[in-house]
Image (cartoon, rainbow over all chains, first blue to last red):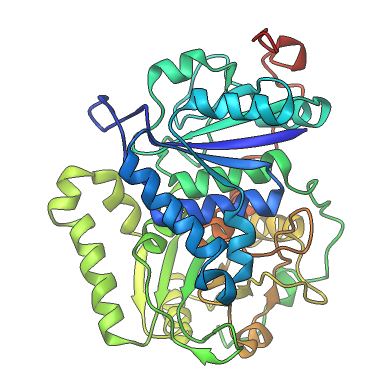
Length: 205
Length: 205
């Protein structure tokens, strides 16, 4: 199992459904890198065709991986080292081919319900059972373009909350999906410590 | 079950273990509010004793809940409406008492392993079985102060990755915990759509 992530800034849609290139967000890079490091995703590709955005992301990564940032916060460099800046999804696929010897399965993600979506439990089992690389795509802005969704090998089912509200940040959605796909096996409820409703402190309430 | 969150900016520790008041981060507020809305946490308290930080957070909330932000992105206002600015954890507890008629159970969180920590599976079951409010605390900076951890009714076990790296952002950690405690029941692996390793596209690899 070898899971790669891609944070896609192009092609994504804006709130009117038009295809745009979104701006790189500093905290996205930190959060995705740290989540990738936590759950041992092999790499996280930062996908943007915009040269200035590539430079911005490159400066940030160098600051934390080599510069004064690394001396002060080595754990950030250790996470951000998993980031790779690429100009397109195609470039990410080629880099994975070069590293792993084969193209990845591509799994797109979406906040919307899509027919035939790949359930998270099954995705987890596939990851465990497959040797080849998998590339999981996260869209910034209002999500991945329709073409990216159509061309992916699968689209993961959305993270469902209590109703149809589906506006998690991409940072939080990626973290939850990594936990669902790679996190520790669900802790059995028997493994408790004795805390419970009956242990409620008497606060005079 | 009524789960409240608190994003604590004081008292937290810096990397030298000293107690400090941290600055409010714009995206923390957005991410916590959207995660709270997704999983139907009752409210998220933004805890800071610093007046200028309270004003900053208040301006942000008003912008998205009432101002031009709400007209453009009503779904953000619908999430940020769950945020409440308070000067202390004590004030959050008092507000919950006023709303719910009783003080909350207080569950702290930590990235560190702590003896007797509350397992997530058990915490989920307690939430389902209890009628009273629960207040779950998230520390910014390098985490909640020792006193807060000691005074809490329980400390939740940390989110474990593949090794001892434990530097998730508070945004991602909160999202994962909300999913573990309030998210949909684990999808059974049988509920698949037929995607699998054998469906791998032939890309010439």
